[in-house]
Amino acid sequence: MIKALFFDIDGTLVSFLTHRIPDSAVEALRKAKANGIKIFISTGRPVSIITNLVQIESLIDGYITTNGAYCFVGNEVVCCHDMQRKDVEIILKDSDSKGYPTVIVTEKSFVVHNNGPIFDRIFRQGLKVDNVDYSKTYEDIKDERILQVTPFINAEQEAELSPQLKNCTLGRWHPDFVDITAVGIDKANGLVSMAEHEHLKIEEAMAFGDGGNDISILKKAGIGVAMGNGLEEVKVCADYVTTPIDEDGVKNALLHFQVI
Image (cartoon, rainbow, N blue to C red):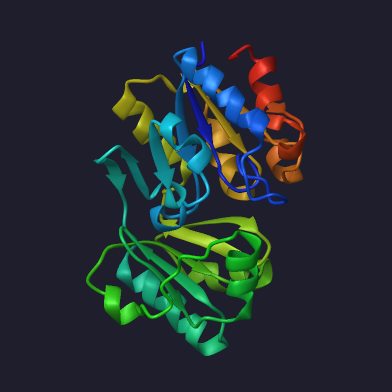
């Protein structure tokens, strides 16, 4: 029996077209909640830029953020995994030498290093992230624990950089950037931590996703659901492929598995 739902945000809960959660998904989650199902977020976004869940905030029981590096329920931190500083320095040195933007995330801060047009195009215009403090620098957060670094590089550049990062996990859900966390830290790891905290069995969890960084949690959960708009490599890893997000994908999956 499914007792908990875990949702990626961008492309899974929130439409890339409307930048909102479809009404059908909101209503489906309300019904699931009324049926005693717990609802969790599982996202690559850090806490500071999770700004697009207002429609369902009252329904959410907990969060897996920064691809599993920082998980919490209410004011209680479930887990927090920081990167080794030498790996961060390697990435930033590469960013400086090649001139690409890199996002640095701590528990509290969101810093854009080497800001450029690609960050604005993807995050501000594409993902509607408009609350970034561009005045913050790496020097301002050097004493904070760094949880995730996101360089704006393509897959070929990633292949050149990744052999230097011996203590990291890389997860890509967008062709223009890759999220980097500490080794072994991904959404599946976040699921395990959250399940232990909530006294859930893994097989009682259903996870939804559309991007490459969702593959680990879709494989780990009792049921993994890929969105119809998701990447092909995500769909082949899922137990079920629902319709696209803008075609009632969340609602249809929950109906299919009789969660609602």
